[in-house]
Amino acid sequence: MNSYYKNKVVAITGGSEGIGKALVAALIEQGAQVATCGRNHDKLYRLQSEFPSAYLHTTVTDVSSENDCRRFIESTVKAFGGIDILINNAGVSMRALLKETDTEVIKKVMDINFYGTVYCTKYALPSLIERKGTIVGVSSIAGYRGLPGRSGYSASKFAVQGWLEAIKTELMADGVHVMWVCPGFTTSNIRNAALNKEGQSHGETPMDESKMMSAEECAGHILTAIRKKKRTLVLTFTGKRTVFLQKFFPKLADKLVYKFFFKDGKLVK
Image (cartoon, rainbow, N blue to C red; front, top):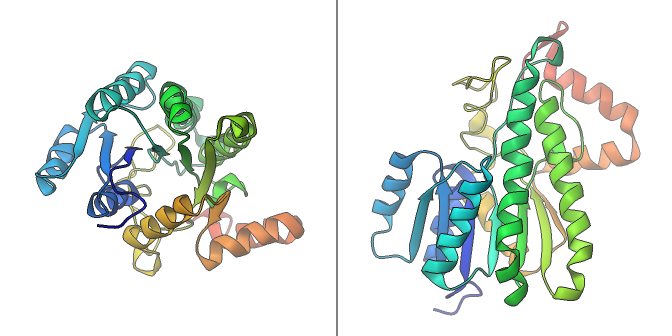
């Protein structure tokens, strides 16, 4: 098997479903040694059962916990000897207006999306520097353009991208590549699991998932971007258009985003 990923050690947070699971499957197929984590033991067990003979290491991890992140990284290094690529994929969204939302919901989103990325990257850094590896943040269009009803999610993704850009510059002399990817609307469980104003999962999505990019296609684009050492990756036409409009025509972007997410003054998406 001739593959860029053959025998590379790749650690992926949130690999039990969605884009994370698609990344795990694609990497194992290409001969990588994969470590992943998630909060749900049963989902990780099923994942392990799907790849019984693969080089797959899993741990139950809540990335909002620094100790959990440390254990995930340390157990990965112990299992495989080091880490070549870290993909910070674990995340949670929210869907609620600020005027109705408990501030703890925003904190919870920040703890998972931003601090989870910080914790895992910090503990993996010595190995990544030693191997001149790659750090990836799975961000969102919401990291370029704040989205209504998702203020905490947008804040967390802006924070992730700013933080990764800062450490990208810090690590240039160490030979570590840092990049972030923005999938746009992709088929996954993130909208079903999005937190409501009380911090509970919605359990449903107002979006038409059938019209979105599949998690498998998204994973393929991400792995190609990592191999090519791209700085950033923005996926889907809607995603690229949103970033373009936000950069050059922000007032127009305000109007279009409002029209997309609201109907008769009420949040519908």
